[in-house]
Image (cartoon, rainbow, N blue to C red):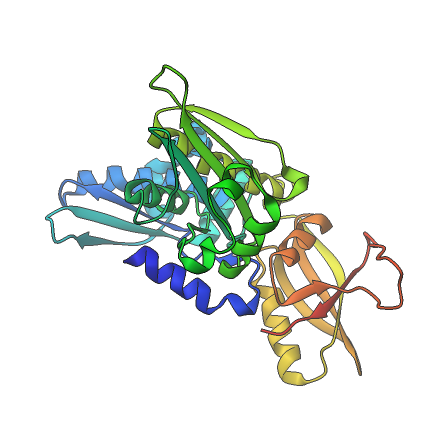
Length: 352
């Protein structure tokens, strides 16, 4: 039911052309514990800290960092609060929340990248060939695999959606489009879910073997190379999510050598002409993970100039802006083609 509600909410907001999702649980983790004893809580909290480092950095090996493991001894320095969640079946979960600023400082100390809270939503179209029959993964056809995708993606802080595959979807996309990675119909169907990225994947058994093969790739031509995984069915689906999260983190995370280094950029925003929108734009800029402060410096009848303090490089700033639907790179309608000036940031306000 929760999966269906998520999909319905995404469909409701699809007209807003959202390019990224604000991930709200990056700095917390939930783990099963045997009881409410201090020893069980400390062990789970230390594991939770390592899991959060993986989510925030996007680095799948962050939990293996020996210095990070050493820092877990001082777990109370990073914790904000903890609470227990008792399930109807008698199981007990511990929810641990950490202080974002302290985790970010630890990320910097460890030399890990920093991946912001605004992350691209990915639509996952997965087809399976089982006993010579091909079918797309949905909550109804393969509920365990569908749940595994959401659970694993949540552990990596990656917003994903497994399409409903209802009549509207099937009018555009079927097994042939997913199996052959026909980009145009898949991306068109994915737009219904406001997905920034789409991947197609196909899973089948190796001939005369118990081994499963999973081939997956992005639908956009720039990242069209096929990624192949082999092994147990559930394991390779989990590995696909890890690979996907790692690839996107490499694209969007801030270089560890740039974390904490403040830079200043001049940001020009066109199409904004009232104080309410100016204030919204300022707050939106300051909500970006790389921005520490935005100050209005010049206002003209058709644009506003901001002086922006940010961490990371100018390229990191641009990548953060790409994920926010409120801002769109400005293109002069008089230009035959757009020329991007690497030293300037000129954008069009799209509104909220």
